[in-house]
Image 1 (cartoon, rainbow, N blue to C red):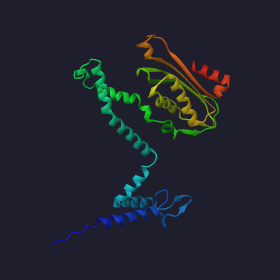
Image 2: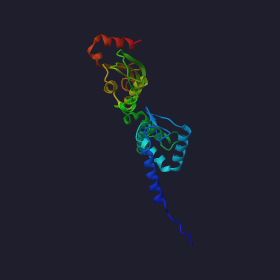
Image 3: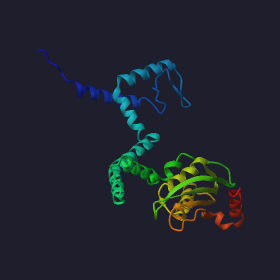
Image 4: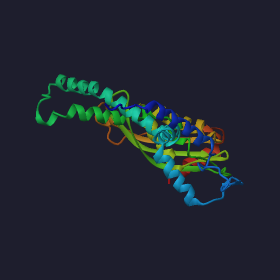
Length: 278
């Protein structure tokens, strides 16, 4: 009779001890300290092939070590953003059936036949579209700016104009859309230019009124950068004035928010307004 001994617990314990010793023997570069590899000014001397071979054997011989390293890396940087994105997607998926049922109910109350070919998937498509239109509720300015603010000895006006904007009027759930012009005067810090458009996207992809949207964009940039001043102007057309109500096809709405030197200094404000008109 053959006896089979399960040594899994002993093997796991040994692996954990080996992993612990492996981490103790190494510093931030991930290379082992040996007599062949003395540390000199933060660098290692030695045979790179020996190091590579050693890494290969360690990472293949101790699978648990690879798992530990991956878990440690997952708590920061891009991994955290991926996890956050996955969580948001899961939340949207959980809410999708309720939104779909609500749209089906709306169609039925309008007198439509939800079983006819053209409307079979309309509730689902409408639910997904509404989630996209309001995806800004899941995002914050910090999420997009934390790795895009740079020290720079620049104190002159920066303007990004003509940023396309689409949003939903919170009063009628119909679109309003137009252009956003953003200016700021740095206080030794600048932000990646594309991030200004992302800030617009965060706040416009919510149920909004144009007046609040203008202020939220300005305050979001001011809080993140602490500049000497921020100016935001939005020009938009509102479908609640075009498709219904007064039905004025050519009307547009202009709103502005001025902070810091843009509010205090008429010349600075005039320069911004002049530059955004051309």
